[in-house]
Amino acid sequence: LDHSLSALEKKEYRNVEQRTLKNLAEIIRTVPDIAPPGGECRAVMLLGPTGSGKTTSLAKLAARYHIFESRDVSLYSLDHYRLAATEQLKTYASVMGLPFFAPLSPQEFAEYLRRDGAELMLIDTSGIGYRDQDRLAQLQEYIEASKTEVRLEKHLVLAANTSPVALEKILLAYDRIGFDKLILTKLDESDFIGAFIEVADKYNRPFSFLMNGQDVPGDIAVAESEGLARMILEATGSR
Image 1 (cartoon, rainbow, N blue to C red):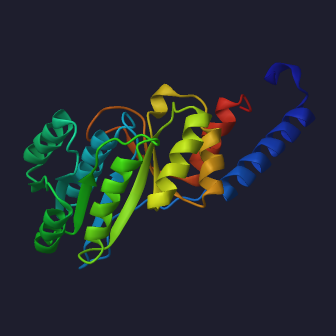
Image 2: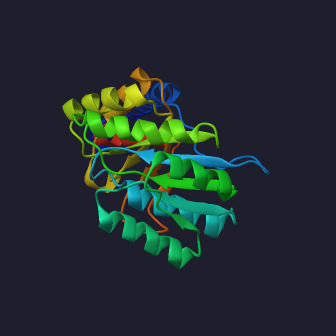
């Protein structure tokens, strides 16, 4: 295409591309930091369906804030259904020298939070499908128990290879229990993320982090509006 365009056409093409990029970036909201201000404590809970990459994402966040930013971090697992996920997170905690907690009830969870004192408490949860209302209700009990103990942020973790139909159903189900931000994972397995930008705009939620592989502590990037917009243009052949 580039060889078949005149100099004037190429310039106009670039101008259109830049305007499109700017317009896209303006509708994409990002809040790329979860660390609390100095002297404060914050809990960050990762929610999402099975296979979205919550446990690996939590480990990447722990490494980012503990190893690279020297933050005081603790890890929690509320996954009572997949022992392997809890053991995986426990291993990450051991390697990084972080406290690890696996409370078995909402009351125990609240007690651990009360006594913790870490700057950043990172909380993994079990994968819950959008149809499983009973387990979503159980998760809501843990969320409610935490409210009197610590400021809690809930990040919905979505795999980039999720179909648009399933994506809408997931957002609707998790919107009922509430979530604050979006983490997009498995970007290395998908070329098109336009549907995610649409639902983020529809539900008025910002992106926080992007994950594009399994490597810990690597394969993590803060979400940036222009970067996401550029990914959409590249995937649709605008570049």
